[in-house]
Each structure stands twice: as C-alpha cells, then as structure tokens.
Image 1 (cartoon, each protein chain N blue to C red):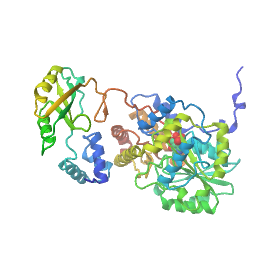
Image 2: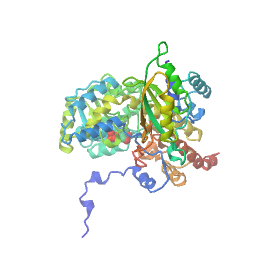
Image 3: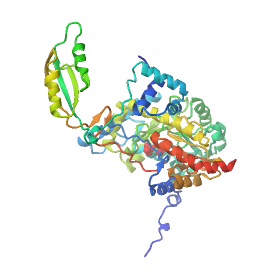
Image 4: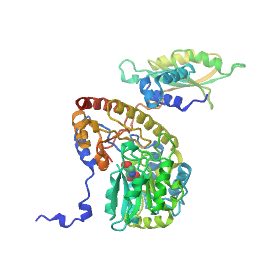
Length: 167
Length: 394
Ligand SMILES: Cc1ncc(COP(=O)(O)O)c(C=O)c1O
C-alpha cells in the first residue's frame, strides 16, 4: 500500500507519541483537523496503525517483574497449511507475547512471559513441545533488556548537552 | 607592576564588539529551569553511524595530519554530494577545502580576498560573525537592512544603492540565521544580475541548505555567471547535527582555493583526521536520517509559527533553518528589554534581534530546535508574560 507524505508524517508523529492531540498534528503538518481525523481513521481501518500500547518497564514495579524467554522451535510444516496452523496453536496461548516465522536453523521464534522460571519451563514441556509437529525446542531466558521496540531501556541515552544560548 | 595592556593590544581586535549573544548566555546560564529557545544548533545528537565511524577511526590510529585541504576521500564525497544535492560541479583535487567549521571557511575567504578598506555587503539581520570577520581581515562591513514587510529579503535596488567603488564582495546566507528567510531561484536571479553588473565576488553561506521546508534548495552557484565569482561555504554542523565536530568546507574556482589553502596551511594545517572519517560516513550513509530531522524541524516550525501568532507575536513563516523571527514591536519593549524580562520573569531564553544588526531591533530570534514538549511549555510561559503587555496596548 502506498501512503501519501501526509499519512507518513502522521505515522511518524504518532509513533513517537500517540497522545499528541489532533489539533496539534493538524498545525504541524498544515492540514485541517477533519482531514487529520480522517487520515488517522483510515490508517486504523487499514490496520496500519494496529494499536496504541504504552511501553511499560514492569521490572521497575515490585511484584510485577516478569521473566521472559525466547524459544526456538523446529516444526514439520503441514501439507496445505504450511506453518500457519502450528503457529496459530501456539500464538493463542496468552503466555506467548510474540511469534515469528524465521529463516535459518529453526522455524518459529516464540517469546513467552511468566512469573517464574518454573512457570515457563512448565509451559515449554507441557504445552509447547507436546504440540503435534513440534520437533524440538531451545529455550533462552532473557537476562536483561537494553532496547525494546526502538527504545533504549537500560543504558546510555543521548542527553541535551548544548549551552543554553548560542549563535 | 601592572601593565598597560591597552598599549599591547591590536586596535581592531580590541575594538571588536562583544557579541550580543554572549550577554544572554551569561544571564541564562546562571539560572535554573530555563527553557531555551536561544540555541543555534540542532537538538539531535549526531547520528550513531557517524559517531561510530569516528570512534573506529580513532581506534585504528588515524591520528596524524591529513592533506591541508582534507582527506581526498572526503573531498571526493563532498564533490559528489554537491553535485547530487545541489547540481554544482567542483573538483575534489583543487576546488574543495575541508575546514574547521563553516566559521573558518568564512575567515579564510575574507582573508584571501580583502585589502585594507575593501567593503563587503552584509544583509542584516545577519549571523553575528560576519561583520567581525570582515573587520579582522581589514575590510569594512557594510550592512544592508531588510524588513519583515518583504520577508527579510534584500532587493536588487538595495544592493545597487549600497555599492561603492570599494565594494568587493557580497555575503549571502540562505536560509538565513536569524530570520530563516530562504532566497528562491527568482530572488537569486535578481540579485545575480546586479552582482554581475558590478563585478562583485559572492560568499554564499549555505550552512542551512539541508534545512529548507517548502522547496528544494537552490544554490546561487547554479545561476549563470555566478560559478566563477562565488565561494560556496557549507558544512556538517546543521544538516547533519555535527556542530561540535567543527567540520565545514568551501568550494571555489581553483584560483581562489589555491590562495585560501596557503593561509590554511600556515594557520591550521588541517581539520582533525579521525573526525574527517566521520564526515565521510555522514555523506555516504546518512541521508535518511537527515531527512527525518528535516521533517521533524518542519513540523516544529509549523507549530511555533502558529503558536506565536496566536499569542500575539506576529511572525512570518520562514522557508528554512530552525529559527523564527517574530515581531515584538507591539509590546513597546526593545528587543533586549523583552528578552531580559522574559528570561527573568518566565525563564524562557530567546535572543534579542538587535544582536544580529540594527534592523533586528523590534524582533526576537526563537530557535525551534527543541522538543515539542519544551516548545509548548515555552509558548504557554510566553503567553503569561505577554498578557499584561498586550492588554495595555488596547
Ligand atoms: C549562518 C551561519 N553560518 C555559519 C555558522 C557556523 O557554522 P560552523 O559550526 O560550521 O562553524 C553558523 C552557526 O551558527 C551560522 O548560523
């Protein structure tokens, strides 16, 4: 799908901060508010804007720290449906937070969230590896998140180091 | 025994005007919680690929001098860049010099062309360095004022009226600091005709050429008859967010570069080697990032122009750079008073227009190279500051 420059600009603004009022967007890209509203609606209807989640660092909140694991899964694709059917069986589990089909030495990359390591181990051994057509699983526990979805979570950020007034 | 230092100092240096910006810097720097619209540089940090390349160059030991005019690879990239982006042709071997910022390119140009008493036309309001650099090089800066009523554009007639037997060159800066005014092809054609008629040299400060918002940049060099008489000055500071790297360049006919490179070899030798490697990366692989920054400035320009007009400060929409230059005449304050009171009362730093020449009086320079959140906060503080001033008027 080809987007206009205005549509692309609106996406850039919302991707940075989806709470910018329509009025401000309209001024920033020199369109009427109605037009901006229309474009946003179109982008949502087309599922180009899928949702407006907040990026939350749960590790900062006592009692809410989750454990995450990335699991490499090898599967035998099924005649007629390929990987899609197995994938669906996996992504329907609420513990699964992301699922990608990969090229390379394994097929599916599954991200799972749980309260404890044990909980995740249980999910892998009892739910994931027992699915028909799953040949093997390799589980990697995530130790630290440095960057997520383009946002640096732990580490050095660029600071504004400019002098207050300059020529 | 205390010395009479006056006796030792050179007259020209001793009598240089201190920059009007300096005073505000001192005041603003001493306060906490200031939102600054006074910063003349990008709010982006240099793109990481450029920084990473310079770090690698340092690790690999690129710590020696380079050729005076700069690394040949960098000059080749500059040559390609000028051709691709602005459709102007310069030979890497003998027409381009890599300098320590556009600032030094300006200095080299003035030193290379000015004899004592030669006049240089400067369109004001103007970047603070021009007049001082002309004086240091022994010339006389001649200001031509411009006005909001004409979008701060100079007219051919004004230029013609300012020309004397001693006029040697004219300095053009588009997009302009502090007004943001962009001279389009039509404007340049008119100016070029006068320049040719009076056989002047042109110093074209194109440091903001990456930052035009309504049309693609036109360099005066592309106007027939101008290439032979122009020293093109540009750099990495603004478009690539590399102010602290101190890297710029100039391009000119070989008869001029050969003289400038002589001055350069005795005063500076060359620009820092490892940083020049970063600049090569900037020109090879950063156009997407430059474009992203450009769009971000454009959105903020549109916001701040709208917001300033709506709180009562008349402001035209500038074609480039990251400054707006609203009128504060309605407040009855001078631009210095305005800037000082705004800073003290509401902790918003702006630069008084008078710092950029007499015709800047009655205006302030606001830089919008600051986050949208900060811009919005600055506007609401300015609104509070303006209310009593603008009520009194009615
Ligand atoms: C119009 C103009 N020319 C030149 C310069 C200096 O640029 P550089 O950092 O390349 O020395 C500036 C910086 O503020 C500027 O605004």
